[in-house]
Image 1 (cartoon, rainbow, N blue to C red):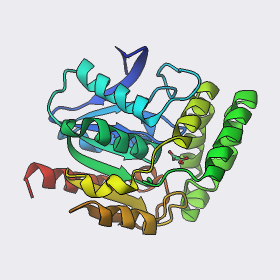
Image 2: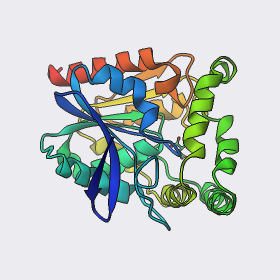
Image 3: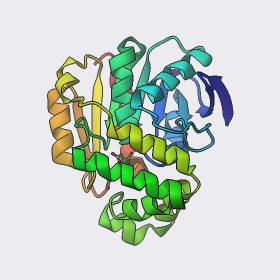
Amino acid sequence: MQRIPLNDIELALHEAGTGRPVLLVHGFPLNHHMWDAQVAALSASHRVLAPDLRGFGQSDVTEGTVTMDQMADDLAALLDAQKITEPVVLCGLSMGGYVALAFWRKYAARLSGLILCDTRSAPDSPEAAAGRETTAQNVLASGPQPVVDVMRNKLYAPATLQDKPQLVAEVEAMMQTTAPAGIAAALRGMAVRPDSTPSLPQIAVPTLVLVGEHDAISPPAEMRGIAEAIPGAEFVEIAGAGHMAPMEDPAAVNQALLSFLGGIESGS
Ligand code: MLT
């Protein structure tokens, strides 16, 4: 784990492997460890960068509101700091997907591919945005537990919740060790993210849209719509998995990612 000074903070980065760069961007309110199985599989053939976003894991926290654009700016600065000038494949899950779409809006020329996992292009409804502010205030007052409680029944396929208590415990430990100010700032940032849906037809990099069959936060039907709106996008549904598909079925997700990366590299 390195700490990279950039913009006004230090960002924590786990890096492994050599080859074409792949940037893995975690969901809320997690950290780079959610990608451990992907880092292990992809780093045999790629240079994998798995940062902790601002406010999460071992990265510095800034209070107030941290927008998806700010997180995208941090990632661009991270690539600069690591002297990566060639275009990267950016893979983001959920909030990481919101960041990936923000990155595409600002830095499309730095992308060779986009992987949108278990994420949404639609913005928050006014009710959802108001709910995030309430959660932010609860977390600032009493710590991460309110988020842990809300997320428990949304993140996994029913079978995961029943059969993989260790995975559920691992995810909850990530949430419980996240700084309340980081959680609140990201909630406020997600609440003001723009609607990306009208721009999907303009995405001109190879794109993979991947979703767990039982994703309750970004359901397959909605993600299929995202894939249909992006010219040439591939769509993969991971059977038996939920919102945390990369952790719930790492073998199937790794296979989809490696096949997509192989396709980009062979120009198909
Ligand atoms: C995530 O998994 O990153 C969050 O569920 C995204 C969200 O709250 O919109």
